[in-house]
Amino acid sequence: MERRGAEQEVDAGKVGERDRTTVVGVEATTLTGLTAGGGCAAKYSAARLEELLKGFVPADAENLLVGLDPADDAAVYRLDDERALVFTVDFFPPLVDDPALFGRIAATNALNDVFAMGGTPLLALSVAAFPEELPTDVLAAVFAAADAQVRAAGAILAGGHTIRDAEPKYGLAVVGTVHPAGIWPKAGARAGDALFLTKPLGTGLVLAAKGDMTEAARWMTTLNAAAADVLRPFSPNAVTDVTGFGLFGHAYEMAARSGVRIHVEASAMPALAGAIEAARDGIRTGGDRRNREYARVDADGVPEELLALGYDAQTAGGLLVSLPAEKALSLEGEFRARDLFIRRIGRVEEGSGVVVS
Image (cartoon, rainbow, N blue to C red; front, side, top):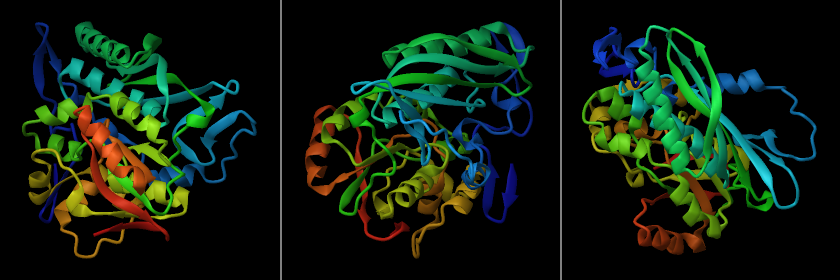
């Protein structure tokens, strides 16, 4: 843990020393003790990723509906007039020590990319890297929990690839399906749209604070399937899931690729219990700094703790949804009727960038 003035910067899931624990009767290094940073806070800097991919020419393929121009939550390839494949891969180091919980969170995070494109998961493969000294029961717990979550999403975990690595990592490559006319891009937001979020924010802050993470764990293992099912008949203009770049980073991407300005109401941003308190105590994750460098927002007068919430790197976060304002009340009503979380957090305007007020 590094202290900078009044702020404490940590990576969610990281501990200062390698703690020891007993797993199935065998002493082993804890999962988070083997990592430099866990969850989506471990994502490569968005700014550096843009620089890396600058000038990269995507394949010229008529049926590649979504690739790198522009990039989105997953690639989409059209098979015929009625079917397209959605393909994504997502993995990261542990952010919790419970191997089963880690497996569920990692699986949820990967599967949610398919839901963010409007698709339905079909098949998944494990992407795994673990130290050989970890007990096999630890790995088995990760795999079993991921398998259960894949099944809950209506898909099949059909295999995968595992290598030796000093830092454990786990995730999934997922294939899903979507109708070619039903793809949800992040580049389609329009002026006049209302902006919604389907999960509260603050997973990175809560994990870094090392307090009660029960609520955070519940949300990080909640698939976005039910939210996507409700959203589908409303034909949203743009959708993305909020993960490692934080709310502001993903809003920034949506605004830039849609050619609009996104206006976020800071007081409307939903927060997990303990997240605001952690931010006020000066706790920040490594993702906070990288996200601020990438997504500069106009936020004069906004309290710092709310800025920290908006920049906080999320793991398995909710859907950020832009849809015509005239559909907003009906959408909220449908979510309430199914006892699902949704919060209107802003609007889409003419202009560019992200404004927070």
